[in-house]
Image (cartoon, rainbow, N blue to C red; front, side, top):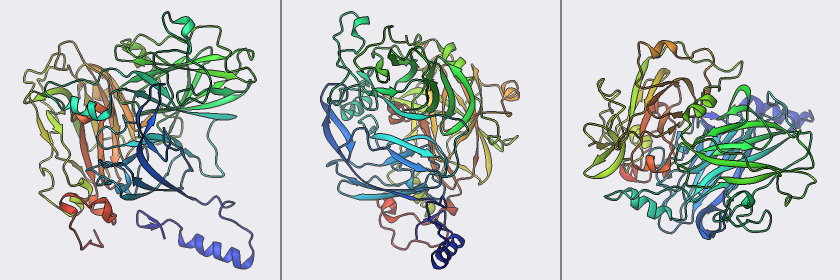
Length: 587
Protein backbone atom coordinates (compact mmCIF):
# COMPACT_ATOMS: atom_id res chain seq x y z
CA UNK A 1 0.00 0.00 0.00
CA UNK A 2 1.46 3.34 -1.01
CA UNK A 3 1.93 5.76 1.86
CA UNK A 4 2.38 9.47 2.13
CA UNK A 5 3.57 11.10 5.35
CA UNK A 6 3.13 7.75 7.14
CA UNK A 7 -0.60 7.78 6.38
CA UNK A 8 -2.22 5.32 3.96
CA UNK A 9 -2.85 6.84 0.57
CA UNK A 10 -6.16 4.93 0.54
CA UNK A 11 -7.76 5.68 3.95
CA UNK A 12 -9.23 2.66 5.74
CA UNK A 13 -12.75 4.12 6.05
CA UNK A 14 -12.90 4.62 2.30
CA UNK A 15 -11.58 1.13 1.61
CA UNK A 16 -14.23 -0.36 3.89
CA UNK A 17 -16.92 1.70 2.17
CA UNK A 18 -15.61 0.78 -1.28
CA UNK A 19 -15.59 -2.96 -0.49
CA UNK A 20 -19.10 -2.74 0.95
CA UNK A 21 -20.26 -0.88 -2.15
CA UNK A 22 -19.06 -3.79 -4.28
CA UNK A 23 -20.66 -6.40 -2.01
CA UNK A 24 -23.99 -4.65 -1.66
CA UNK A 25 -24.12 -3.07 -5.11
CA UNK A 26 -24.01 0.59 -4.14
CA UNK A 27 -22.87 1.19 -7.72
CA UNK A 28 -20.09 3.63 -6.83
CA UNK A 29 -16.75 3.70 -8.66
CA UNK A 30 -13.43 5.30 -7.79
CA UNK A 31 -13.76 7.85 -10.57
CA UNK A 32 -17.35 8.70 -9.66
CA UNK A 33 -16.30 9.21 -6.06
CA UNK A 34 -13.62 11.64 -7.22
CA UNK A 35 -11.00 9.56 -5.45
CA UNK A 36 -7.34 10.39 -6.12
CA UNK A 37 -5.60 8.37 -8.79
CA UNK A 38 -2.08 7.06 -9.24
CA UNK A 39 -0.45 8.52 -12.36
CA UNK A 40 2.35 6.17 -13.38
CA UNK A 41 5.19 7.01 -15.79
CA UNK A 42 8.29 5.19 -16.97
CA UNK A 43 10.98 7.51 -18.22
CA UNK A 44 14.43 7.10 -19.70
CA UNK A 45 16.77 10.10 -19.72
CA UNK A 46 19.40 10.21 -22.46
CA UNK A 47 21.26 12.58 -24.77
CA UNK A 48 20.08 12.77 -28.36
CA UNK A 49 20.53 14.85 -31.49
CA UNK A 50 17.92 17.59 -31.82
CA UNK A 51 17.42 20.91 -33.58
CA UNK A 52 15.62 23.17 -31.10
CA UNK A 53 16.35 26.35 -33.10
CA UNK A 54 17.04 24.79 -36.53
CA UNK A 55 20.70 24.14 -35.59
CA UNK A 56 21.40 20.50 -34.74
CA UNK A 57 22.76 20.04 -31.26
CA UNK A 58 22.84 17.59 -28.35
CA UNK A 59 19.90 17.83 -25.94
CA UNK A 60 18.94 15.86 -22.86
CA UNK A 61 15.59 14.26 -23.56
CA UNK A 62 13.10 11.90 -21.94
CA UNK A 63 11.76 8.90 -23.86
CA UNK A 64 13.06 10.48 -27.06
CA UNK A 65 11.15 13.71 -26.45
CA UNK A 66 12.28 17.30 -25.98
CA UNK A 67 10.95 18.95 -23.90
CA UNK A 68 10.07 15.97 -21.74
CA UNK A 69 6.53 14.52 -21.54
CA UNK A 70 3.87 16.63 -19.86
CA UNK A 71 2.55 15.30 -16.56
CA UNK A 72 -1.13 16.02 -15.96
CA UNK A 73 -2.92 15.12 -12.76
CA UNK A 74 -5.65 16.25 -10.38
CA UNK A 75 -4.93 17.73 -6.97
CA UNK A 76 -4.58 14.87 -4.52
CA UNK A 77 -3.33 12.38 -7.11
CA UNK A 78 -0.12 10.46 -6.58
CA UNK A 79 2.49 10.73 -9.31
CA UNK A 80 4.89 7.81 -9.73
CA UNK A 81 7.84 8.26 -12.08
CA UNK A 82 10.27 5.40 -12.64
CA UNK A 83 13.31 7.27 -13.90
CA UNK A 84 16.10 5.33 -15.59
CA UNK A 85 19.41 7.06 -16.26
CA UNK A 86 20.53 6.16 -19.79
CA UNK A 87 23.36 8.69 -19.72
CA UNK A 88 26.75 7.02 -19.98
CA UNK A 89 28.99 9.24 -17.87
CA UNK A 90 26.91 11.30 -15.44
CA UNK A 91 24.25 11.04 -12.78
CA UNK A 92 20.83 12.66 -12.95
CA UNK A 93 17.96 13.83 -10.71
CA UNK A 94 14.69 15.64 -11.44
CA UNK A 95 13.16 18.36 -9.28
CA UNK A 96 9.36 18.80 -9.35
CA UNK A 97 9.31 22.59 -9.22
CA UNK A 98 6.54 23.98 -7.01
CA UNK A 99 5.42 20.60 -5.61
CA UNK A 100 5.73 20.81 -1.82
CA UNK A 101 6.63 17.14 -1.22
CA UNK A 102 4.85 16.93 2.14
CA UNK A 103 5.76 13.56 3.60
CA UNK A 104 8.13 12.76 0.72
CA UNK A 105 11.11 15.12 1.07
CA UNK A 106 13.39 12.49 -0.47
CA UNK A 107 11.42 12.92 -3.74
CA UNK A 108 12.26 16.63 -4.12
CA UNK A 109 14.93 15.70 -6.67
CA UNK A 110 17.89 17.76 -5.49
CA UNK A 111 21.28 16.05 -5.76
CA UNK A 112 23.28 16.12 -2.51
CA UNK A 113 20.33 17.66 -0.68
CA UNK A 114 17.35 15.30 -0.83
CA UNK A 115 18.96 12.31 -2.57
CA UNK A 116 22.02 10.84 -4.23
CA UNK A 117 22.37 11.31 -7.96
CA UNK A 118 20.95 8.41 -10.00
CA UNK A 119 23.97 6.69 -11.51
CA UNK A 120 24.18 5.62 -15.18
CA UNK A 121 22.08 2.52 -15.76
CA UNK A 122 20.21 2.82 -12.48
CA UNK A 123 16.50 3.44 -11.89
CA UNK A 124 15.02 5.60 -9.13
CA UNK A 125 11.30 5.82 -8.44
CA UNK A 126 9.80 9.15 -7.45
CA UNK A 127 6.48 8.94 -5.57
CA UNK A 128 4.72 12.08 -4.43
CA UNK A 129 1.31 13.68 -4.11
CA UNK A 130 0.41 16.80 -6.08
CA UNK A 131 -1.65 18.52 -3.43
CA UNK A 132 -2.56 21.82 -5.05
CA UNK A 133 -3.91 22.82 -8.47
CA UNK A 134 -1.66 25.04 -10.54
CA UNK A 135 0.89 25.50 -13.30
CA UNK A 136 4.20 23.81 -12.52
CA UNK A 137 7.13 22.18 -14.30
CA UNK A 138 10.00 19.81 -13.64
CA UNK A 139 13.70 20.02 -14.45
CA UNK A 140 17.11 18.52 -13.82
CA UNK A 141 18.79 19.61 -10.57
CA UNK A 142 22.32 18.28 -10.92
CA UNK A 143 25.01 20.54 -12.34
CA UNK A 144 23.46 22.53 -15.17
CA UNK A 145 21.32 19.78 -16.72
CA UNK A 146 18.35 22.14 -16.96
CA UNK A 147 20.42 24.12 -19.46
CA UNK A 148 20.92 20.90 -21.43
CA UNK A 149 17.17 20.58 -21.97
CA UNK A 150 16.08 18.36 -19.08
CA UNK A 151 12.66 19.87 -18.33
CA UNK A 152 8.96 19.53 -19.00
CA UNK A 153 5.52 20.72 -17.89
CA UNK A 154 3.59 19.53 -14.84
CA UNK A 155 -0.04 20.64 -14.77
CA UNK A 156 -2.27 20.01 -11.77
CA UNK A 157 -6.01 20.42 -12.25
CA UNK A 158 -8.44 20.87 -9.35
CA UNK A 159 -9.81 17.78 -7.65
CA UNK A 160 -12.49 16.05 -9.69
CA UNK A 161 -15.84 17.62 -9.00
CA UNK A 162 -14.34 21.04 -8.24
CA UNK A 163 -13.46 23.89 -10.57
CA UNK A 164 -11.25 26.93 -10.92
CA UNK A 165 -12.54 30.29 -9.62
CA UNK A 166 -12.59 31.68 -13.16
CA UNK A 167 -14.16 30.60 -16.44
CA UNK A 168 -12.39 29.68 -19.67
CA UNK A 169 -13.29 27.60 -22.71
CA UNK A 170 -9.94 26.04 -23.60
CA UNK A 171 -6.31 26.25 -22.53
CA UNK A 172 -2.83 26.43 -24.03
CA UNK A 173 0.31 25.39 -22.19
CA UNK A 174 3.59 27.26 -22.88
CA UNK A 175 7.02 26.36 -21.51
CA UNK A 176 9.60 29.09 -22.15
CA UNK A 177 13.35 28.49 -22.15
CA UNK A 178 16.62 29.86 -23.49
CA UNK A 179 19.10 27.91 -25.61
CA UNK A 180 22.85 27.93 -26.25
CA UNK A 181 24.81 26.25 -29.03
CA UNK A 182 27.75 25.77 -26.67
CA UNK A 183 27.49 22.50 -24.72
CA UNK A 184 26.53 22.60 -21.07
CA UNK A 185 29.73 20.76 -20.15
CA UNK A 186 31.78 23.49 -21.79
CA UNK A 187 29.71 26.13 -20.00
CA UNK A 188 30.33 24.46 -16.63
CA UNK A 189 34.08 24.23 -17.22
CA UNK A 190 34.18 27.88 -18.27
CA UNK A 191 32.33 29.03 -15.15
CA UNK A 192 34.73 27.06 -12.97
CA UNK A 193 37.89 28.33 -14.71
CA UNK A 194 40.37 31.06 -13.81
CA UNK A 195 39.71 33.49 -15.31
CA UNK A 196 36.01 32.68 -15.59
CA UNK A 197 34.64 32.19 -19.11
CA UNK A 198 31.10 33.54 -19.03
CA UNK A 199 28.43 31.59 -20.94
CA UNK A 200 27.26 34.70 -22.82
CA UNK A 201 23.70 35.40 -23.89
CA UNK A 202 21.55 32.59 -25.32
CA UNK A 203 21.37 32.09 -29.07
CA UNK A 204 17.59 31.75 -29.06
CA UNK A 205 14.41 31.75 -26.99
CA UNK A 206 12.40 28.53 -27.19
CA UNK A 207 8.62 28.19 -26.95
CA UNK A 208 7.76 24.60 -26.03
CA UNK A 209 11.25 23.63 -27.17
CA UNK A 210 11.02 25.39 -30.53
CA UNK A 211 12.84 28.51 -31.70
CA UNK A 212 14.61 29.99 -34.70
CA UNK A 213 18.25 31.00 -35.09
CA UNK A 214 19.61 33.16 -37.87
CA UNK A 215 16.16 33.65 -39.38
CA UNK A 216 12.83 35.11 -38.29
CA UNK A 217 9.18 34.41 -38.93
CA UNK A 218 8.81 38.21 -38.90
CA UNK A 219 11.71 38.81 -41.31
CA UNK A 220 9.83 41.43 -43.29
CA UNK A 221 10.08 43.71 -40.24
CA UNK A 222 13.78 42.91 -39.63
CA UNK A 223 16.33 44.07 -42.16
CA UNK A 224 18.92 41.50 -43.15
CA UNK A 225 17.16 38.43 -41.75
CA UNK A 226 15.83 35.60 -43.86
CA UNK A 227 12.29 34.33 -43.49
CA UNK A 228 11.74 31.20 -41.40
CA UNK A 229 9.03 28.76 -42.37
CA UNK A 230 5.86 28.97 -40.29
CA UNK A 231 4.95 25.32 -40.65
CA UNK A 232 6.53 22.00 -41.38
CA UNK A 233 7.79 18.87 -39.70
CA UNK A 234 11.07 20.37 -38.57
CA UNK A 235 11.79 20.15 -34.84
CA UNK A 236 12.20 23.92 -34.79
CA UNK A 237 8.92 24.79 -36.53
CA UNK A 238 7.13 27.36 -34.37
CA UNK A 239 4.60 26.14 -31.83
CA UNK A 240 1.43 27.79 -33.15
CA UNK A 241 -1.33 28.88 -30.77
CA UNK A 242 -4.53 27.80 -32.52
CA UNK A 243 -7.66 29.55 -31.25
CA UNK A 244 -11.30 30.04 -32.23
CA UNK A 245 -12.90 33.49 -32.27
CA UNK A 246 -15.14 34.63 -29.41
CA UNK A 247 -13.63 32.26 -26.85
CA UNK A 248 -11.80 32.67 -23.55
CA UNK A 249 -8.44 30.90 -23.39
CA UNK A 250 -6.31 30.15 -20.37
CA UNK A 251 -2.65 30.36 -21.31
CA UNK A 252 -0.36 28.70 -18.81
CA UNK A 253 3.15 30.16 -18.99
CA UNK A 254 6.14 28.72 -17.13
CA UNK A 255 9.75 29.84 -17.43
CA UNK A 256 12.54 27.31 -17.08
CA UNK A 257 15.17 29.64 -18.52
CA UNK A 258 18.75 29.20 -17.37
CA UNK A 259 19.53 32.93 -17.48
CA UNK A 260 17.04 35.14 -19.29
CA UNK A 261 14.26 37.18 -17.73
CA UNK A 262 11.46 37.40 -20.28
CA UNK A 263 8.57 39.59 -21.36
CA UNK A 264 5.47 37.97 -22.87
CA UNK A 265 2.95 39.80 -25.05
CA UNK A 266 0.28 39.04 -27.66
CA UNK A 267 -0.47 41.65 -30.29
CA UNK A 268 -3.85 43.42 -29.86
CA UNK A 269 -4.80 41.25 -26.86
CA UNK A 270 -4.97 42.09 -23.17
CA UNK A 271 -3.79 39.53 -20.63
CA UNK A 272 -5.83 38.94 -17.47
CA UNK A 273 -3.45 37.54 -14.83
CA UNK A 274 -5.23 35.01 -12.56
CA UNK A 275 -2.57 32.62 -11.20
CA UNK A 276 1.06 32.85 -10.12
CA UNK A 277 3.18 29.85 -9.08
CA UNK A 278 0.13 27.67 -8.43
CA UNK A 279 -1.70 30.30 -6.34
CA UNK A 280 -4.69 32.41 -7.33
CA UNK A 281 -4.16 36.16 -7.47
CA UNK A 282 -6.47 39.14 -7.68
CA UNK A 283 -7.15 39.32 -11.42
CA UNK A 284 -5.66 42.31 -13.20
CA UNK A 285 -5.34 43.26 -16.85
CA UNK A 286 -2.06 44.08 -18.56
CA UNK A 287 -0.63 44.37 -22.06
CA UNK A 288 2.36 42.15 -21.20
CA UNK A 289 3.95 40.27 -18.32
CA UNK A 290 7.51 39.93 -17.07
CA UNK A 291 8.39 36.38 -16.11
CA UNK A 292 11.60 35.36 -14.36
CA UNK A 293 13.27 31.97 -14.30
CA UNK A 294 11.31 29.60 -12.08
CA UNK A 295 8.04 31.54 -12.21
CA UNK A 296 4.72 30.47 -13.71
CA UNK A 297 1.54 32.36 -14.53
CA UNK A 298 -1.91 31.77 -15.94
CA UNK A 299 -3.43 34.53 -18.06
CA UNK A 300 -6.83 34.68 -19.70
CA UNK A 301 -7.28 36.14 -23.16
CA UNK A 302 -10.50 36.75 -25.07
CA UNK A 303 -10.28 36.13 -28.80
CA UNK A 304 -12.39 39.18 -29.63
CA UNK A 305 -10.19 40.74 -32.32
CA UNK A 306 -10.73 40.75 -36.09
CA UNK A 307 -11.30 37.02 -36.82
CA UNK A 308 -9.91 37.31 -40.35
CA UNK A 309 -6.42 38.11 -39.01
CA UNK A 310 -3.67 36.34 -37.07
CA UNK A 311 -1.64 37.99 -34.29
CA UNK A 312 1.95 37.87 -33.04
CA UNK A 313 3.07 36.24 -29.81
CA UNK A 314 6.39 37.76 -28.74
CA UNK A 315 8.81 36.77 -25.96
CA UNK A 316 11.71 39.18 -25.48
CA UNK A 317 14.64 39.41 -23.06
CA UNK A 318 14.45 41.76 -20.06
CA UNK A 319 16.96 42.82 -17.39
CA UNK A 320 19.99 41.95 -19.55
CA UNK A 321 21.38 43.71 -22.61
CA UNK A 322 19.39 41.80 -25.24
CA UNK A 323 21.70 40.07 -27.67
CA UNK A 324 19.08 37.36 -28.21
CA UNK A 325 16.27 37.97 -30.71
CA UNK A 326 12.71 37.64 -29.39
CA UNK A 327 11.00 34.28 -29.54
CA UNK A 328 8.09 34.61 -31.94
CA UNK A 329 5.05 32.61 -32.89
CA UNK A 330 1.51 33.23 -34.09
CA UNK A 331 -1.89 33.32 -32.42
CA UNK A 332 -3.79 31.65 -35.26
CA UNK A 333 -7.48 32.55 -35.46
CA UNK A 334 -9.05 29.50 -37.07
CA UNK A 335 -9.92 28.84 -39.83
CA UNK A 336 -7.26 31.28 -41.09
CA UNK A 337 -4.18 29.74 -42.61
CA UNK A 338 -1.14 29.63 -40.33
CA UNK A 339 0.90 31.14 -43.15
CA UNK A 340 -1.17 34.32 -43.05
CA UNK A 341 1.20 36.69 -41.26
CA UNK A 342 -0.16 39.41 -38.94
CA UNK A 343 -0.54 42.79 -40.59
CA UNK A 344 1.33 44.67 -37.82
CA UNK A 345 4.87 44.19 -36.43
CA UNK A 346 5.31 42.00 -33.33
CA UNK A 347 4.82 43.71 -29.93
CA UNK A 348 7.98 45.53 -28.98
CA UNK A 349 9.75 44.23 -25.88
CA UNK A 350 10.16 47.00 -23.26
CA UNK A 351 13.65 48.38 -22.81
CA UNK A 352 15.78 45.79 -21.04
CA UNK A 353 16.77 48.11 -18.17
CA UNK A 354 13.38 49.74 -17.64
CA UNK A 355 13.13 48.32 -14.13
CA UNK A 356 10.39 50.76 -13.16
CA UNK A 357 8.14 49.02 -15.67
CA UNK A 358 9.14 45.61 -14.29
CA UNK A 359 8.37 46.75 -10.76
CA UNK A 360 5.04 48.21 -11.83
CA UNK A 361 3.97 44.76 -13.02
CA UNK A 362 5.39 42.87 -10.04
CA UNK A 363 3.87 45.24 -7.48
CA UNK A 364 0.37 44.63 -8.90
CA UNK A 365 0.33 40.98 -7.83
CA UNK A 366 -1.79 40.38 -4.72
CA UNK A 367 -3.40 37.26 -3.28
CA UNK A 368 -6.96 36.49 -4.33
CA UNK A 369 -9.70 36.96 -1.77
CA UNK A 370 -9.93 33.97 0.54
CA UNK A 371 -6.24 33.09 0.22
CA UNK A 372 -4.34 32.07 3.37
CA UNK A 373 -2.93 35.04 5.26
CA UNK A 374 0.55 35.09 6.81
CA UNK A 375 1.12 34.91 10.55
CA UNK A 376 1.10 38.41 12.01
CA UNK A 377 4.53 38.02 13.63
CA UNK A 378 7.72 36.21 12.80
CA UNK A 379 9.81 34.13 15.19
CA UNK A 380 13.06 34.48 13.33
CA UNK A 381 14.45 36.76 10.63
CA UNK A 382 17.37 36.08 8.28
CA UNK A 383 19.13 38.73 6.22
CA UNK A 384 20.70 37.18 3.12
CA UNK A 385 23.14 39.44 1.27
CA UNK A 386 23.70 38.50 -2.40
CA UNK A 387 27.24 39.29 -3.56
CA UNK A 388 29.67 38.42 -6.33
CA UNK A 389 33.07 37.42 -4.98
CA UNK A 390 36.30 35.53 -5.63
CA UNK A 391 38.09 32.56 -4.11
CA UNK A 392 41.77 32.46 -5.07
CA UNK A 393 40.94 34.17 -8.34
CA UNK A 394 37.91 31.99 -9.15
CA UNK A 395 34.65 33.89 -9.61
CA UNK A 396 31.88 32.94 -7.15
CA UNK A 397 28.51 34.09 -5.88
CA UNK A 398 28.00 34.16 -2.13
CA UNK A 399 25.32 34.66 0.52
CA UNK A 400 26.53 36.48 3.63
CA UNK A 401 30.04 35.84 2.31
CA UNK A 402 29.56 32.05 2.06
CA UNK A 403 29.53 30.36 -1.36
CA UNK A 404 27.53 27.12 -1.24
CA UNK A 405 29.45 23.92 -2.04
CA UNK A 406 27.29 20.81 -1.65
CA UNK A 407 28.69 17.82 0.28
CA UNK A 408 28.97 14.23 -1.07
CA UNK A 409 26.40 12.91 1.43
CA UNK A 410 22.82 14.19 0.94
CA UNK A 411 21.78 16.47 3.80
CA UNK A 412 18.47 14.69 4.35
CA UNK A 413 20.03 11.31 5.09
CA UNK A 414 23.00 12.83 6.93
CA UNK A 415 20.70 14.70 9.31
CA UNK A 416 18.34 11.76 9.69
CA UNK A 417 21.23 9.60 10.86
CA UNK A 418 22.93 12.42 12.79
CA UNK A 419 26.19 12.14 10.83
CA UNK A 420 28.02 15.10 12.32
CA UNK A 421 30.98 14.87 9.95
CA UNK A 422 28.94 14.87 6.71
CA UNK A 423 28.71 18.67 6.58
CA UNK A 424 29.69 21.73 8.62
CA UNK A 425 27.62 21.72 11.79
CA UNK A 426 28.10 25.46 12.30
CA UNK A 427 25.19 27.35 10.70
CA UNK A 428 25.97 30.12 8.18
CA UNK A 429 25.69 33.77 9.26
CA UNK A 430 22.12 35.01 9.71
CA UNK A 431 22.96 38.58 8.73
CA UNK A 432 25.74 40.72 7.24
CA UNK A 433 27.74 43.66 8.64
CA UNK A 434 25.54 46.68 9.27
CA UNK A 435 28.04 48.98 7.54
CA UNK A 436 28.18 46.96 4.29
CA UNK A 437 27.90 49.32 1.32
CA UNK A 438 25.50 47.71 -1.16
CA UNK A 439 26.04 50.48 -3.74
CA UNK A 440 29.71 49.76 -4.39
CA UNK A 441 31.89 46.71 -5.09
CA UNK A 442 32.81 44.78 -1.94
CA UNK A 443 35.84 46.24 -0.14
CA UNK A 444 37.08 42.70 0.43
CA UNK A 445 36.02 40.62 -2.60
CA UNK A 446 37.30 37.33 -1.13
CA UNK A 447 34.80 34.76 0.13
CA UNK A 448 34.88 31.14 1.31
CA UNK A 449 32.93 28.01 0.45
CA UNK A 450 30.64 26.42 3.01
CA UNK A 451 27.92 23.80 3.40
CA UNK A 452 26.30 24.67 6.73
CA UNK A 453 22.54 24.60 7.26
CA UNK A 454 19.96 27.03 8.62
CA UNK A 455 17.89 24.88 11.02
CA UNK A 456 14.39 25.91 12.06
CA UNK A 457 12.06 24.66 14.77
CA UNK A 458 8.89 22.99 13.52
CA UNK A 459 6.12 25.52 13.14
CA UNK A 460 8.47 28.48 13.35
CA UNK A 461 7.51 31.55 11.32
CA UNK A 462 10.55 32.70 9.37
CA UNK A 463 11.17 36.01 7.60
CA UNK A 464 13.88 36.23 4.97
CA UNK A 465 15.14 39.59 3.74
CA UNK A 466 16.89 39.10 0.42
CA UNK A 467 19.32 41.99 -0.01
CA UNK A 468 20.82 42.76 -3.41
CA UNK A 469 24.14 44.59 -3.82
CA UNK A 470 26.72 45.81 -6.31
CA UNK A 471 28.77 43.18 -8.13
CA UNK A 472 32.56 43.14 -8.51
CA UNK A 473 32.40 45.75 -11.25
CA UNK A 474 31.24 49.22 -10.31
CA UNK A 475 27.70 50.35 -11.14
CA UNK A 476 26.40 46.83 -11.80
CA UNK A 477 23.73 44.89 -9.95
CA UNK A 478 21.65 42.07 -11.44
CA UNK A 479 18.16 40.72 -11.01
CA UNK A 480 18.00 37.43 -9.09
CA UNK A 481 14.91 35.18 -8.99
CA UNK A 482 14.97 33.11 -5.79
CA UNK A 483 13.17 29.76 -5.50
CA UNK A 484 12.29 27.95 -2.27
CA UNK A 485 11.80 24.18 -2.23
CA UNK A 486 9.22 22.52 0.00
CA UNK A 487 7.22 25.69 0.75
CA UNK A 488 5.17 28.48 -0.65
CA UNK A 489 5.95 31.84 0.96
CA UNK A 490 4.22 35.18 1.29
CA UNK A 491 5.89 38.07 -0.51
CA UNK A 492 5.58 40.84 2.05
CA UNK A 493 7.23 43.60 0.10
CA UNK A 494 9.99 45.10 -2.02
CA UNK A 495 12.13 48.16 -1.57
CA UNK A 496 15.04 50.24 -2.77
CA UNK A 497 18.47 50.33 -1.15
CA UNK A 498 19.28 48.62 2.13
CA UNK A 499 16.41 47.19 4.19
CA UNK A 500 15.64 49.12 7.36
CA UNK A 501 13.91 47.08 10.06
CA UNK A 502 12.72 50.28 11.75
CA UNK A 503 11.25 51.91 8.63
CA UNK A 504 10.67 49.22 6.00
CA UNK A 505 9.61 46.62 8.58
CA UNK A 506 6.51 48.68 9.41
CA UNK A 507 5.42 48.88 5.76
CA UNK A 508 5.26 45.16 4.98
CA UNK A 509 2.02 43.87 3.47
CA UNK A 510 0.26 41.49 5.86
CA UNK A 511 -3.20 42.06 4.37
CA UNK A 512 -3.05 40.35 0.97
CA UNK A 513 0.54 39.33 0.11
CA UNK A 514 0.75 36.82 -2.74
CA UNK A 515 1.83 33.25 -2.09
CA UNK A 516 4.70 32.28 -4.39
CA UNK A 517 7.53 29.77 -4.63
CA UNK A 518 9.81 32.07 -6.66
CA UNK A 519 10.43 35.78 -6.13
CA UNK A 520 12.65 38.41 -7.70
CA UNK A 521 15.03 40.87 -6.06
CA UNK A 522 15.70 43.95 -8.16
CA UNK A 523 19.11 45.63 -8.55
CA UNK A 524 20.27 47.45 -5.40
CA UNK A 525 17.00 46.50 -3.70
CA UNK A 526 15.49 44.10 -1.18
CA UNK A 527 12.62 41.63 -1.08
CA UNK A 528 10.94 40.36 2.10
CA UNK A 529 9.25 36.96 2.33
CA UNK A 530 7.63 34.99 5.18
CA UNK A 531 7.01 31.25 5.46
CA UNK A 532 6.13 28.71 8.12
CA UNK A 533 8.65 25.93 8.72
CA UNK A 534 6.04 23.17 8.82
CA UNK A 535 7.32 20.66 6.23
CA UNK A 536 9.83 18.15 7.69
CA UNK A 537 12.84 17.87 5.42
CA UNK A 538 15.88 19.63 4.02
CA UNK A 539 15.18 22.24 1.39
CA UNK A 540 17.19 24.30 -1.07
CA UNK A 541 16.68 28.06 -1.34
CA UNK A 542 18.62 29.47 -4.25
CA UNK A 543 18.90 31.80 -7.18
CA UNK A 544 17.18 30.10 -10.13
CA UNK A 545 19.68 31.44 -12.65
CA UNK A 546 21.58 28.28 -13.52
CA UNK A 547 25.16 29.64 -13.66
CA UNK A 548 24.63 31.62 -10.44
CA UNK A 549 23.61 28.49 -8.52
CA UNK A 550 26.50 26.62 -10.13
CA UNK A 551 28.80 29.31 -8.70
CA UNK A 552 27.44 29.03 -5.15
CA UNK A 553 24.36 31.26 -4.92
CA UNK A 554 22.17 29.30 -2.54
CA UNK A 555 21.50 28.24 1.04
CA UNK A 556 20.05 25.17 2.77
CA UNK A 557 17.06 25.16 5.15
CA UNK A 558 16.10 22.25 7.42
CA UNK A 559 13.19 21.60 9.78
CA UNK A 560 11.73 18.61 11.60
CA UNK A 561 14.08 16.07 10.02
CA UNK A 562 13.44 13.77 13.01
CA UNK A 563 9.84 13.51 11.78
CA UNK A 564 10.82 12.29 8.30
CA UNK A 565 9.75 8.70 7.64
CA UNK A 566 11.77 6.00 5.94
CA UNK A 567 14.03 7.27 3.17
CA UNK A 568 14.33 4.87 0.19
CA UNK A 569 17.74 3.16 0.43
CA UNK A 570 18.78 4.14 -3.10
CA UNK A 571 18.17 7.82 -2.22
CA UNK A 572 21.13 7.62 0.17
CA UNK A 573 23.44 5.07 -1.48
CA UNK A 574 26.36 7.50 -1.66
CA UNK A 575 28.75 9.30 0.64
CA UNK A 576 28.68 8.46 4.33
CA UNK A 577 25.22 6.83 4.18
CA UNK A 578 26.13 4.34 1.45
CA UNK A 579 27.01 1.56 3.88
CA UNK A 580 24.13 1.97 6.33
CA UNK A 581 22.45 -1.40 6.84
CA UNK A 582 20.24 -1.08 9.91
CA UNK A 583 17.66 1.51 9.04
CA UNK A 584 15.91 2.94 12.13
CA UNK A 585 12.18 2.29 12.03
CA UNK A 586 11.38 5.22 14.30
CA UNK A 587 12.65 8.80 14.30
